[in-house]
Image (cartoon, rainbow, N blue to C red):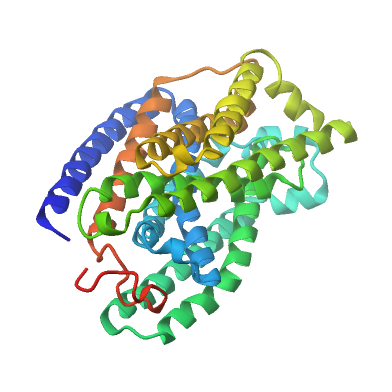
Length: 389
């Protein structure tokens, strides 16, 4: 990595770390004044920053599995994103310890009034719930460790054998990813509304991180494209590939959201309808419309234009919009469980977003600086990467 790029990344890492630490210190004061509000804001911020971490793992396994050359420029970004998962494993601890401030079923006085069926009582029992969280992160971290370990060996040794191993590990890893995200979304988000049920819920939470990971990769690539050796390879057609990926995940997100709404509306069941009634009225309804416009319609129309997908400036700006709207999306999914009458934004929503985000970005940049920016010994890229990169 050249010195100029190293200095640029340092200018991102250090302020991000400083802002994160300061924001977290301020948030601790909020935790003392209003611990329940602190945990509500913490849950949204945690989920937002968890999404690109697990999404990078999913996209990395996809590109290993299908042997796509489109992964050349973003593979290091994806690998660095996966290595932020140990941080998120630490940050889930406050949720596990303060579950009674978030989940009705975890409150001894309220649990009896919920009239949960026997299966839900067993499934949401605290020991089983905590054990599942440990299993989720344990499996994800195992996959992250193996893929990154073999990737580092590939940098040192070369050859196609390690690539074959990573491909074989990615196939079951993608299946495992879908199951983990489904169960984690049910455990940590759907269970906020104990009566709600949706078979599509987990799929939505599997698409969101993949979309965010691609958006993050575009933003990072837009920065790296100014420097060697990335600038030689950052051609418009490559950005067009990432624009197409964003388009696919944008369409899939909209399809799953509409499909869930249509099924619940047609079923008209007492346990499911209230979830949408709360989110379709008042200010929550206005946010739903904004999500349709800014998180689907606008990106969908722009990503159809090659003038956008082949220009790094426009594509990276759109990627920023997508990331910001995903925070709104997660806030719209999670927060009505706490304030069904309408959103009540709190200053801790901002400080915890910056606090966790600053630490996450700093950790991510630290990981990005630790490896060569291009996988020069990946057999798929022979003849593509200039010699000496």
